[in-house]
Amino acid sequence: MTYGELVRDLRDQDDFDEDEELVLERVWELIPVDDKGTTIKPICGALGRPWEHVRRCIDRLKEGVLVTTRQGGGVSRKLHEYPNERASYPVIRAELETRWAQESPHNYIDGDRFCTVLATEGMKRGRWSAPDITLIGGKTLRFLPGKFLDVVTFEVKPTLDITGLYEALAHRTHATHAYLICYNGNEPWKNEPDAADVGRITREAVRTGVGFILARQPDDCGTWQKIVPATRWSPDPETMHDFILDINKIDRYKNALRQLRSWLRSDSFFGAHPQVDFASLDLSEADQKLAEDIYLEIPLSRDKGVGWKHFEGWIDKETVERIRERLKEAGVIRVLQKGSMRLPL
Image (cartoon, rainbow, N blue to C red; front, side, top):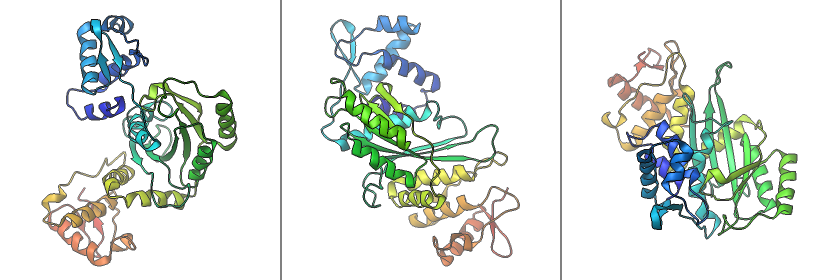
């Protein structure tokens, strides 16, 4: 387990809030990357926190096998090695999801916003068109109307390989931001990167607008250096939509993208769709998912609804009508005379 994976698990616990997450991260950053180690006392001094508070953070980290106890009560990080590029995907994804996404200027994890990070390597989209990791983030901005959706792709390389930059560039056909993340193979914390290779990739990143991140440790976002930020790109909306639609075909991501649709459909005046227990509607498992899909497509408005034609090419008419009747019987929706479905607001 890595730090990002540990935080992702802790967020599901009732006794772990934003303040404790902030302190935990500060404690983690004060534990050396090398094998020299440190003790609780200097951490308490640096943070101005009582011994018991820091001890609790250390215990949480030890549960995740992130630090090891040394003689004299010292602690140090457990270093991770990656035998191949694929082994680094889960830890980089966890760092993106728990730390990178909430940092400025991304701020996807803040109030009425949306964030999901997906492993998209291996998608059947042709050569260079499937990124290793994709972050989908949504924002509402205080003084601008509407919602803003970012699709951020990441190409991961265990070497300073400039080919990876051109792979990342290919992703901009369907992404608003594209990044190349490079780390140093099996020993990311030991050897300094070659300055000439870094310079070569940096120049091309600046020229093309592809972001370039040098990750000294893939499992610790705090050691990442954003050498070049990605330039925001405006891909063809249909192409970006088709990319998200392809992700939606991967069964393990369907729920995440249902949440995305729910967020996009939510309204600052009406709020989000009321929660519905689709498992209680006496429908098959497949129909429960279709019922949720249909429900989330109904606008949050007293005056607007959708009919079966809205789902043409996605869900056949007979299925829409059958599920529509079940949702109506359960009081989940209203059905007008011409078959239009509305929420019972």
